[in-house]
Amino acid sequence: MVTLLEKLFHAGDLLEVNVVLKEFYQLLLDNQPIRAKACRALADQILSSYFGHLSNLLFENKRYISVSEPRSPLCYLASSGMQSGRIRQTMKGLRETIDYIDNFILPPSGACLTMDSTETVMAVLTNKFPYFDVIPTNPLFILHLANSHKAFNSMSGFGDGEEAGRGIIVMLHMKDMDIFPEYVFLHELGHILQVAITKSPNTVPPAFLRFHNEIGGVPFSEGSPDAPDVFADTFAIAVMHGTELEKYNPFPFQEPLCRSFEAFYEALFRNCLQTT
Image (cartoon, rainbow, N blue to C red; front, side):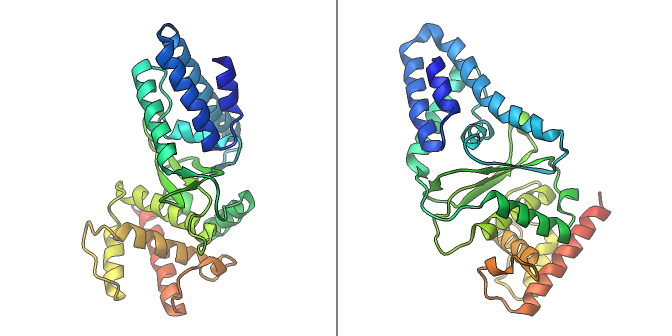
C-alpha cells in the first residue's frame, strides 16, 4: 500500500494516476481487512498534497493560485471529490474516477496554457476590471494538467464539500488545434464570473440578456442554453480588446462591437460593486 501511495504522489499526469488507482481499487477488493486503513491513507495522501500546497501559498495572500505538474493530478482528484476516507464513498469515488479517466482523458495532443501565459492573462484582466472584487472566491484555483480531454479544452466550476465556494479552473492541452489556450482560459474566467453573479451555471445576468438582444444577436430569453457560453465569449473579447492579448481573439468582430462588449463589462462590474 505504501508503494502505491508513493507511486500516486509521483504520477506525472492523470493517465499515470489511473494506473495506480486501478491497482489501489483491486487492493481494496482483495483485502477487506485493510480497507479502512487504506481508504484513510488514500484520502490523507490526496488532501495533504492539495491543501498542503494551498496553505503554503495562502500566506502570500494570492487571489489566484496556479498549480502545474506533477502536483496537479492529485489536486485534480481532490477538487473532483476524491476526499473521503470512508470505505463505501472511497470505493464509489475510485470506480467513478477510474471510469471517467478511461473514457475521457487522453495523452496531450495540442497547445497548453503555460504558467507564464497565466500570469500575463491575469495581469491584463486585473488591470482592466476589478475581477476579484466581484467573484466570491479567494483564492481562485487554476490546475494545469498534462493531458487532453475527448470533449473539452478546459473545465470550471465551484468546489463541493470542504471546497464549497472556491472557484476552480482546469486547463488541459487543446483538443482543438485552431484555438488559443489564452482565449479558452479567459472564457472559463467568464464562466466563473457568470456563476458568481447569478449563482447558477445555467443563468446569465439579466443585464446581459438585454444587452445581447439590443445589439442584434440571436435573441435570448431567460434560461437560453447558449447564453452562458456567449457571456463567457464576450467577456473574453472584452478583456482582450486593446491589449497584448488581442492576437488570441478567435472572433472576427469589428472594432465598434468589441468596444461595446468592453463598455458592457465595465458597467457590469461597476453595478456589481455598487450593490454589494
